[in-house]
Length: 459
Image (cartoon, rainbow, N blue to C red):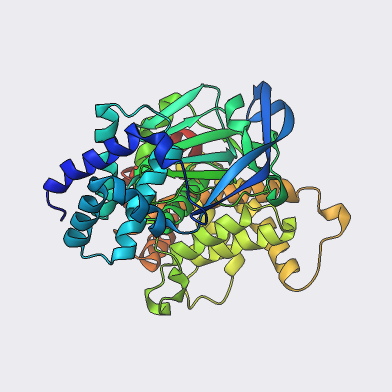
């Protein structure tokens, strides 16, 4: 841990730079390389927003901006330290307390100078100096910074202007300012269409690095795909850390288009927060598939196939087949070999009674989906006159799969998959078994907090 006396030395360091901006912006030959770059700034105005679809007018303009590339930061630091004694004092303290090499300590102090000269637009009042000092000390102590994460989302829409899920998680409608984008013209890869932004998500959270952020966001999107029936995609993203030594990131953009969308309302905020907290904790770490077969959770397989089935880059037969394989991972035992279509359809139709769906209708829909799956995996496609209902079949079974997954996830800490299947089979023919299972299902938290969009009946 850095000793407290370095705080006063760094305070004087920051104050010195702030009082001598013009001097520190003067560079010797070969210390920096300044080049003019052509940038493109795109702006837009939202004329109308309805159910996540926006009418937008946009325009682009090019301008020239000077970029500074540091060539010899050590020479710059040594030159400045001859005039300002505080430079060497800071360097000595940082090297001593952190056991850093000379060049690395200079690099960190130069990062602070660059922040003060080029990234800090506020006047250096005493309060502002204290804020910068705190951030820099956190950086030196390797304390995870607070990140402002901004996501341009397709797949969720709002009637309300914004929904405050928590103090550090906000979902809001897009504004015209969200459409602005600036980047080097020669590297222009930004191709997302403005009208595809159905909402903006802003998150304020501490992460050690961008890898942690990406893993968190992967779980977040999976959770939102399960909260309601939607194919949620991140169209554009931006990560801004409250840090001086950690860089701001604007990772890749996506051209994926969401066909399954849903609305989130203000009165859902508490349930949504509870759901996200639970699911983000529940989801496994990355590359869970590489674990030994005996420890793999069949629910993870079901979730993965659910996610594949709601994507847009496959035929309708493939989506239906993928959905059925997700059901098979959940509702068929490993040693079952006969009457698979009947057993699967029967078990799914039994569960439908908890969601106010007529079991016979669900049974017939599952049988139809299984026929499509069987035809497809044997290398055939249905003729045109037998394809009219496929889109509706897919939507119906993906809805059923989503709520089945929620039920399995909620019960996973109480019983194994095979135990649940046994209880389902017993409940179909035994009223007492049905009563006992119903009592367990009615207590499930995920089904209760998503009842608004699953139709779950707690009775």
